[in-house]
Image (tube, rainbow over all chains, first blue to last red; front, side):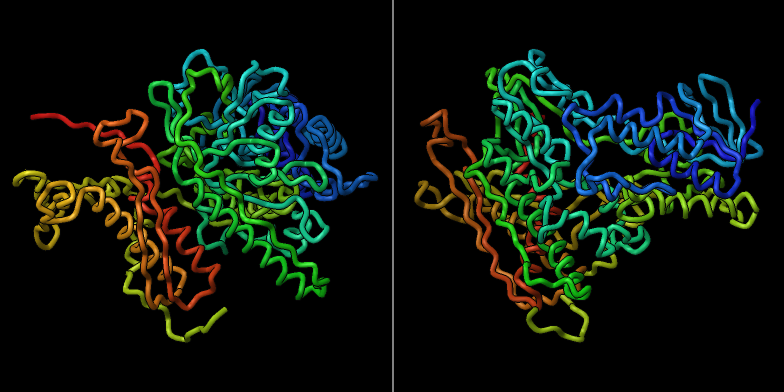
Amino acid sequence: MPRTTTVVIGAGHSGLAMSRHLADRSIDHVVLERGEVASSWRTKRWNSLRLLTPNWMTRLPGYAYRGDDPDGYLTAPQVANLIGDYAKQSAAPVLTGTAVAAVRPAADGYVVRTDQGTWEAPTVVLASGACTLPVVPASAADVPRELTCLTADEYRNPAALPDPGVLVVGASSSGVQIAEELQRSGRAVTLAVGEHVRLPRTYRDRDILWWMDASGLLDEPYDEVDDLVRVRNLPSMQLAGTPGRTVDLNALQGLGVRLVGRLAGIRDGVAQFAGSLPNVCALADLKMARLLDAIDVWALSAGMDDGDVQRFSPTHLPEPAPLSIDLRSREIGTIVWATGMRPDWSWVDAPVLDRKGRLVHHGGVTESPGLYAMGLPFLRRRKSSLIDGAAADAADLSAHLAAHLAGRAGPRRWTA
Amino acid sequence: MTTTTQAPADNGVNVEALLGVRNTLPDSPEIARFQWRSTTSWVHGTHSRSDVETFYGFSDEQKHHTSFSFDVDHPEQFAAQDTSITPVEYVLVALGGCLTAGVAAVAQQRQIQLRSVVATLTAEMDLHGILGADPDIRNGFSGVNVSYQIDAEATPEEIRALVAQSQKRSAVYDILTNPTNVTVDVA
């Protein structure tokens, strides 16, 4: 049975950032990848998708963007190529085409069973990603058969959908972008809106992420937020990777997108929507205003106050939003489930999952000694879910891992 | 920002107890399973009386400190005795009570001292529905409006955020804004 010191599972940006830090510490390791490097970026993105973070923010350990378009946004193939180049540049020990079937604690660390053989290692890093499996509400089972249903990771372009209108369920990053593209293509789009995170693409002439980065908001550590459960479950930001293009609900309605409340259920072929649309919009408007307030306070303290404080109009609400749509009326031909993605831990055979199958960890350190996680929302800091967060997380966790190997981390006993 | 006090806010809500319950949930999720109950007896005409005394929660049978009784009737304009308020008005009572409890609890958690909180609730309804006079009109409310007047040691934005957060965590708001399966059987 081959042995190494650390098995990293997943060769996306997280796994490769960890690999780079392990190499810097001369820790022998392999990176197991079920497909190719950056597999999801090659196979699970719609055609027009661009990275939500600007190029200058695409930073990895030992890598920074040096191209001529720092404020641009990479296409999905460009992201895949960048991560592939990074793997080569780092000489990361990646084994592609190696799918992990099980990770199990053993006498001296872990046994990692794959379709290409079994590895043994005292330490394992789970870097298979936060967005592996689509989350679809139970009511998907009640959609009339004649409708076409697809998840956001199955969506490719408007031409691939049948003719009539489209119901996009979910108004986070994927949902608003897909709704916008479909509406622009000439389809009648209805968008079901639950809780969402509204953001302008540009604030005071700079990318909103520039402000969040410069002001330190993205560095906020996981152990200093007052409600970690809430921030780890926040919907993704309503952003699209195009300079100056905001995709909030006002922009979408300007294009003709019809808003309805959160999809509450489907009964006898009729989709029912919650009457809470005004409040989810009020919550998002208030939250955005608090963010901009914090940015303004920081700008003032940083001597950047050019007096150009901006505020955006509240979300305009349709009066009244429809509470139901008959899905048998042929008005809607397609439902796009943009209702989120989740990690797949089905192959993790260690006592680190809670009753709902979610990974329990403290800043990426699990209760099972030597088992770590990377690339999850707010893993160690607000930017942990971004490519730009991997460097700091990998630095922290590789230090913990090295201390564990040296026997300095102390026994972290698993308690049921 | 208006005035700020040095004394900690006290709205009479024990948020520590509520947060304590939340913190025990990961280890014992079953304590969160609650059942609410009431018994309604017909009195005469459209007058009935509902009694509420017990409920289930925290893994055990629970009891209010006494049995509460509520009369339900319809007004004289409906050719009834008007011995008490209508069922739909109880819905407004429930929504106002739920949202206002939420405002107090969220304010306590956020250390905002409340001085007065008044919610005015209105619900629109078209009698064509319950009279069976127009099948296109639903029986229930066509809309509900809640208007808050809040005097508190907080900015207008903070007060709006209190009210928004209260809706987000309100059971009755959820019951009214989302469909619920209802079964009615005859024993």
